[in-house]
Image (spheres, rainbow, N blue to C red):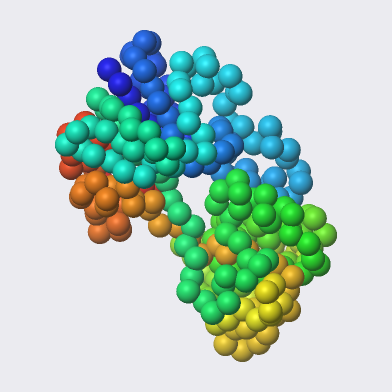
Length: 276
């Protein structure tokens, strides 16, 4: 049996462990466009805050792939899936055959089409490359756009580094998809107690500055800043499935059945990219 897993985060690693609990010998190839293996995305804010070093972000030991007899292809993007021939093509130009394929490509951070969003000093916080970028940003003032859990964590991380952070949310409260108004008010007070300015009910309209961002303009004010973190949500990274002709769901995730199989035989999806 030849297994191929596309993705390197929680769903992919859980799949490796499940396969090895039943099949101790078959080949497993794991592809991830992340160059850093086995890190936990939910710990990235602690890395940005300089509270955890990179090795402490790992949620499995460094010898995991050797122990599980997995051939890792880190930093190698899969560009093509052929369900009929049961092959994939990778960015390294090679073609690989599979008997079972798992797409665990996760989600992609949404970059809103705000004028000036391509300026230097603006980043999402989803990948290790994002975290490295934010960690190396210089300045005293930051605006974090989006008051979900990642946005709140990012604000706290920047504050712990001595950066004055402002949290901007276009809806009327922080963490709007998690809490009701009463609970959100309690959370907001805790955030403000840390010295973070919280602005709700205002939308970012544009970013000013030359090559580098200098401010965020909302519908009522201008917020000077040296850096911006975008945390407005994620969407399923289902481009491979779309290319392969797999069925997508209403939320543009990969449609799966009760056994997580997609519309193609022997191709499965799991994690943030899957839709039931």
